[in-house]
Image 1 (cartoon, rainbow, N blue to C red):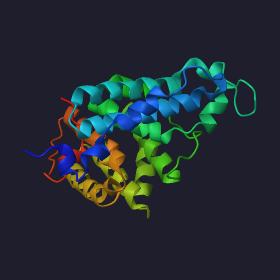
Image 2 (tube, one colour; image 1 turned 120 degrees about the vertical axis):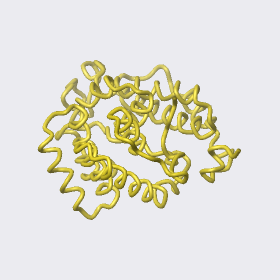
Image 3 (cartoon, helix red, strand yellow; image 1 turned 45 degrees about the horizontal axis):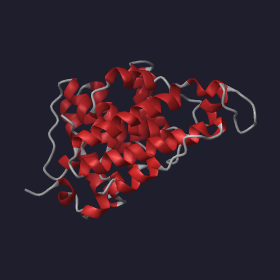
Length: 252
């Protein structure tokens, strides 16, 4: 039987988590409090990347351990009290400044994927209190921010009418990736099984053609993982095709 890295077309050496384990080992343990958020983001990124590698080589125990570290790191990044004693770029202590300036989208995406794979739904609700309008635009632009804030509101079941309107706007937009993700979220909000299956298949086909070809670390989809597990909890049947099953993190 072929292994996951073979099915994904990844050379064994490319799925080796060693690089990220060495990077974690080299993170300084003593540093200025001003750089606390930078250190946290590096740890989160390395733990998430290591977890992906362990998943691809089918070491689910190590994958889950690093995934748990992602959750702990994001909780501290978003909700930790370090903001009350770390200086901002302006050289002052201002907890509110971080909410408007700290990069957050990649960390929240990782939390959605690993949190849903681990079944940490209450923690997902807690962390989903963080994304809001004053958060900065992430690396992928305004559409990503709108999508993630809408997902956060959906998870919290608040401001759903506004979230649906934002998602409908994204679904009709020109950014294909976020249009497909918006359709996924809309289908889930409506609990429409047929629509969800169609949106799921369309997004994974796009992911396989575009995102999954970039590098090893994006060979699994945090978004598809989130919807697969949300659907399972909501008892909405979602089928995975043979070509797409390895893009979803399943740890049980």
